[in-house]
Image 1 (tube, rainbow, N blue to C red):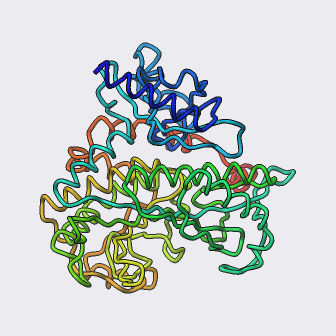
Image 2 (cartoon, helix red, strand yellow):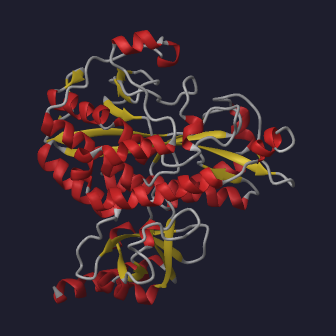
Image 3 (cartoon, helix red, strand yellow):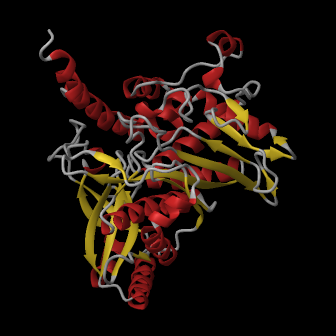
Amino acid sequence: MAERRSRTATTAAARLKRGGFDYVRCQFIDLIGIARNRLVPAAQIPKAVERGLAFGAFGTTLDIDDIPSDPALGSHSGDMWAVPDLHSLVPIPWLTSTGHMFCDLVAGDGSPYPSDPRSKLAALTQEFSRAVGAPQFAYEAEGYLLVKTAAGRYEPAYRGHGWNADLLDVHSPFIDELAGVLSVMDVPVERLQVEGGYSQFEAALRHGAPIDAAQDHFRFKQAFRAIARRHGLVGTFMPKPLPDRDGSGLHVHISARRGTKDALFAGHELSVTGRHFVGGLIEHAGALVAIGCPSINSYKRMQPGFWAPTHAFWGVDNRSALVRIVSSERHGRRIEFRAGDGTCNPFLLGAALLAAGLDGVRRKLDPGDPFNEDVARSSAADLARHGIVRTPWSLDRALDALEADDALARVLGPELVQAFLHVKRSESAKFSAYVSDWEYRYYAEQH
């Protein structure tokens, strides 16, 4: 073990010297999707790789106000250790001589920390590879460019039309710098396009191993927001920043390889394994929505008619479905999960998708027949005939669904699920106690 650690430390020192780094940001992503950091001098990185960086054990359950949400994990609870993953080292181009690494969280004995989503995703990737095939993910993210007014309100940076070139012209300095930064960081963007006309963008990232795909997505988000700030803009992946415009989602494209074959498809159709995988996603829809759409604001987006999945069903090329089968031969058949947004932890969402799919495969769950109509234009009677039910329409309802999903917790890990519930119950309770401007407007002087 000592010899292996010595080799790792030597490799770290060599890579840092080649990259010309003076400092490295070592990050883990907590359960509310926030990057928690240590800025480590490059000379100290070999020691950090060998020993880890100490954080309070409550670190994954800090709530939206940075307050520990689990009473069992407070100032008395000792440490966890963030171990930088040397393979994830890249430069941060908008900073001087600074690198970036993702970290795995470990307990004092070196075992994976139970509420670390990245470690859980790595373990489930191996388990899924043995049972089904090597999974590949691609994250497809939507976000807005906004301006913050003197009054503190957020407005779109430009008003135009969706898929329109004018927006590309207006924002070309931002786009050019962002594209250069992403290239240096080796974030594989296949497509960056105008999505909505009010300065909404969409980025499709290349398929890769689940850990790599989640890292690429989070680095894209960080770059988008950082470069926006440099141009006097606010880059946001808030699900519903503008009340009268479409929200921003996060779609995860999923495939799996068994040798030279696609394990989830047989020709033009889902394979038997693929059907069971989709069955697992439908079976655990409520819990997956809680993890993929984990903020109060998420459910302002999750409304019928706004290109967001609101019912638990699957369909072929149906963008109103929770699970969409992309049938294009030109771009490759794949399964697309559409109930995510930019407030989620991408490692946790990836782990939850693999856990749900594995449960479906093992229990041979049948997803039923595909539904290929627009759910927003379908009657309640028609949906009932097809056995299609509404997914949770508030964070509290989604958390209830996750808490009741014992089967998913067994695969995903009860400690991780409970930690997530603690932090999100805290967020929901704080919002419920908040008195909004809307309430003052309608109640203060009329009742």
